[in-house]
Length: 364
Image (tube, rainbow, N blue to C red; front, side, top):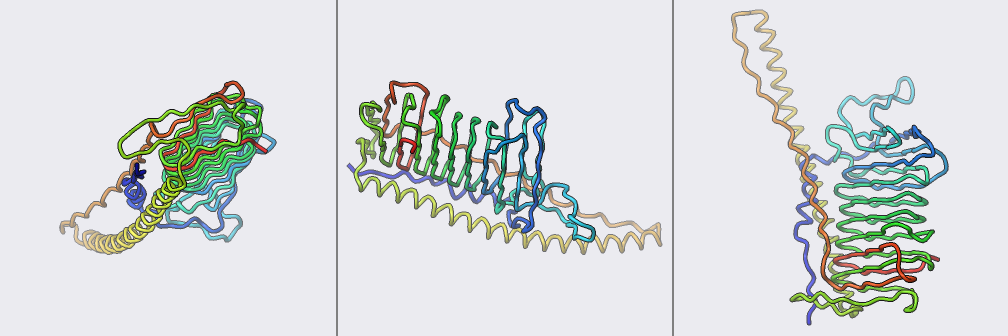
């Protein structure tokens, strides 16, 4: 039976959507750094991050301070010294706030989507919980965090290293690699529509395991007496669900992931070109508006000199288009399903991929 690879036709359209917001500017080369202290050190705290597109690296440290270094400028940041240049037009900036031990990091400006090349290096207390969301893309790295982690990403790899809390990851296109330093005591739920999933847990982890993939292998280095499993087949026309895919099947899955990534790159290039054209149109429109304003000023001066002369009406500016909605990340069902218990059972571990290999390994 042939293995048919599903094609996700909606991905280019989803990527192209951010062009409608005018994403053309690059991040400021100088950037800035900002810090906030927790208002209640020693108590549960959360970092909430929601940006359209950025590469993000988060590291757990000792202390009660969250520090952000970014290629973007901080909102309302004053010039570093007297005589420094001050930007007058609208720019994309980041805003870092803290209230009741909840730290929020967001982008600000007329068009936050214009900061799609931004980078963030963030240090947080090790016990801090993380709620991380990128609307369209960017790689995400988290290291040495004991708090619970929730990630929602559209395009980009997710790497979690040295973690120990609950982990819930949903990504559309990208590999997910997670390494636990201690046996997880809370839910581990990782989903990638197009990408491999590689989970490392300590040898003494006690878990109930469920792993499923449509196109790719399910692999482990745990012995049969430690990880006891059974295979469930969900039959559907056009799919082959035999456990342990053949090399041809694995190659087909890898080809599907590469094709999806190529489509993303092509759509991203097209979106950026469309955004550049939109910027050129906006500049032309601004020149026309400047001419109209000059004409209006001239007519106002004439009207002041001759009060009986009627003033020509001005043309209102067109409203800005609303931000394009983010497509939902689908839930994966069916495919090859392997369930079982690790060291007799315990916490739930759920790993799901549409096109990608799933590997459950022992931490070194």
